[in-house]
Image (cartoon, rainbow, N blue to C red; front, top):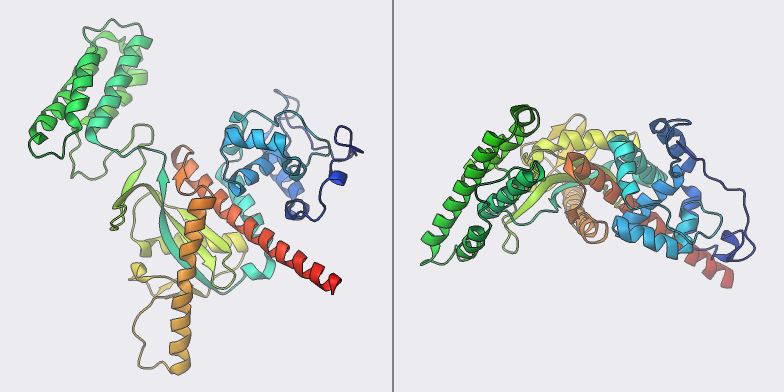
Length: 432
């Protein structure tokens, strides 16, 4: 059941009414809350709630504001609700007119709200962040690049996956009350020690035998559970799970479409070719920003590790949906070789000048390709400041939501910085 936001009360002191009268009216966060179209979100998201049924839900403005603050301040769900209780500016940003000494909601309610509005709702929030910049987001030229959004998984090894499968099978047997002939818990401890020295020349054969023994143990437990579990429960619930485990145990180092994580099977490996980090495990994402204003106008999360040139149609389509206009020129790096035009957009790559180009055209292309490097620090800020370096949200939907919210936070931070300098200029003019 949906509860509407209340904005009628006023507070004369900290423990009474009217919270806004005690805060700094020049704070950029308060001005940002004044320009965000909260009513549009309430009209768009109220279809996800039932009228008169269920427990009372939290106001939509509160939940959307919490999602924005989470990405802006790089906070987890648990830390966010605690900081919201301690910070009156956060409370005012989310539409509170009275100081709230309690937590706004349980941290798990943010998970339910993200699932409730889904990718469509996050797209609407991202489009709002683009529209705040007005004409600055309507540039004809954009810079496009790809990066990796790493998933919250450990470095995958075959031995680690085998041990996790064995632990899951033992928990499954205990849950169903099955008495096992042997759990192999003590033997696994010794095998784990043998695998630690896999790179040592003299101990490599011992580590290989330990890995083979781990796979054998996992198969033994699977066969035992198949014999002892009721057939109805097996084929309805657990057969797909056992087949998945057998696929993980059978894969070899050079196989394609490998499984790198049991709880995130859609993760794939992206080779970076860099000394400090040769491989990253997650998904490839595309980021498009305006050439002059550095406003992110398009982001796409890719399910498969495709060549960069094959990602251009999706990115350009998303730019058109996000800001309502097409792109004339997309400036990319040499990783996008193979495409000179996509739809009506010209693809500009750094290359040798054409003989037919005059001096002005050569200088223009060179400046555009030099300016393309501005998207690299944008990606760096998305990873270091806005939670793109490690994605804690589950599944493919989590990849898309985390990317959209990180880009939204970047655009909002750009707006806050622009407002700060505008306010500083106004003060200088008044003092002079």
